Image (cartoon, rainbow, N blue to C red; front, top):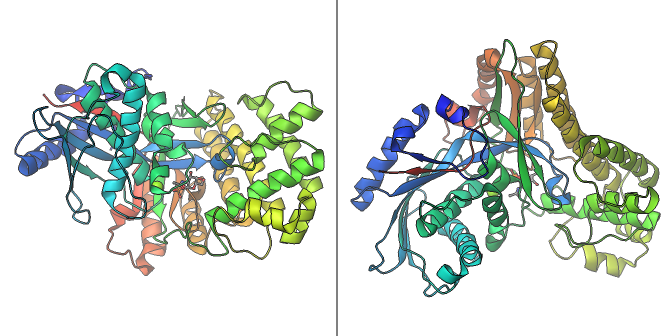
Length: 524
Ligand code: NG1
Ligand code: MG
């Protein structure tokens, strides 16, 4: 699905774009016609508008968003859409939700009166909770933006039809796409069509929305879904505040850049309490930051994503104390490269227990008791481990943050002697990221490794896991001319011997260029 020329030629805008009926991108026309028909079949009328928000893949910068280092994702062509009719104000303000996927049954609930917040019960797992997350952050936003109008006002009732093609639970951030489409719909429904929704504000309010259902995520996914631009990757920064800046991929002479996204069909165990999981990595990088701070006698501000300081905060504190830096790193590429290289040296010198740290060793290194260590690092989320691999995890984080800057530098370089020069260089960074994820962060798995090997042997320049890893999806940098070769090789050598769990090949191997982020279609 390639967006039409009208869209690609749009100037990058600061606000979520709105299109009217006569301006639907060619490729979306059939989907859009279906939505209107389906909506009418369910609710007996046409919708007022449709919101759309895409899924994402992370191109490079894995497991560093939660320590506030910048990442480089892109929005993909697969998206979630919400068709919406606003109920007239004389009707009881309720929300009816219908999902195109029969796995998600219809839901209906009344809206709280007079500006009260909707309540969300995170212990109940239901798809309507994700809708409520989007609704809640949108309402809070409206109250802040237009206090006189929304402080004590009941939101308008809605009939909503949800459909899309971002598969759930596969590492493409379908939940973020859904919440962004919902928040945008609620804002559009209540603030009206004349209000332009600033992308930066939509990103910031949706970033934390999943916290209401108990997911302690960063903000990369929402930033990518909201701020995506055709043919651009997004440089997502977390400090001093969440911000996504689009960078265009270079225009090559003879080839087109494509990304193949292949699902391992192995379900990521990132939330399980096993020896390998997401929360344990969060603990390890936090402890690493504190061991480094203890060694260099710097105090972490403890204001970031994590209560106990991050590797990013250590870098800034170290530069403040030893290098006379008056400001934290401001995102500048060259300065970042220098500082991150220095950090890698400190990791080599300081985190000397290469086999890993026992709780006793880690406590000693931080100058605290085992009891304090357990209280500070091991009780918030359950984790199980033998040793904490501080050296390996910290080395991954700093080197991965460095690769993000190298990738950005390449994208902004301008010209290349030939197309292969770009593919080789960007691909190499992706391959190095995969190596680091596998060997240092240990978040790959045999299936991911196998897919990467097959893809590289058949035309991919760069192949890596995307998202948390331990299964989930992989992403591959492939020139258009090699897409079929990569896809066919994966079909024959990987998928043919696997249970696709009811999915078709077209559903497990996607091809996408970087696409537009959230937008609104007004139905006339
Ligand atoms: P996935 O596995 O795609 O949901 C997760 C985190 C990201 C980031 C990556 C690792 C959530 C919702 N998202 O992505 O924020 O930390 O892992 O880079 O947990
Ligand atoms: Mg998610």
